[in-house]
Image (cartoon, rainbow, N blue to C red; front, top):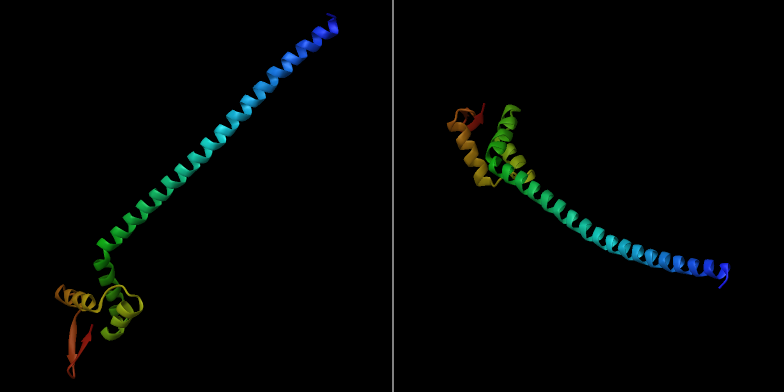
Length: 128
């Protein structure tokens, strides 16, 4: 066997080994791509859960304070000298903050707490 044939044989062995390494690396890359895709989906799902939990927390805090918020809005409109029927239209009909019954219940509570005062003029109740 000549020197060239020995070199040729060594090169063939090296190329075969390199091909095997390349195929192994390609397989590992494909496995990593699949794993990366799975992890992205899990992260996305966790982010959605966090957002959902955060939204739920905000909504629950608002629901707990809804009565206070609506009463504050009523007082703002009373300070603007708006008549109660107009305030009711804004709060109940347009903004849909609460029901009509709740609105009048809040008005009664504000009267009892002394935050709204009324006077009667010609059998019409005027808020001051």
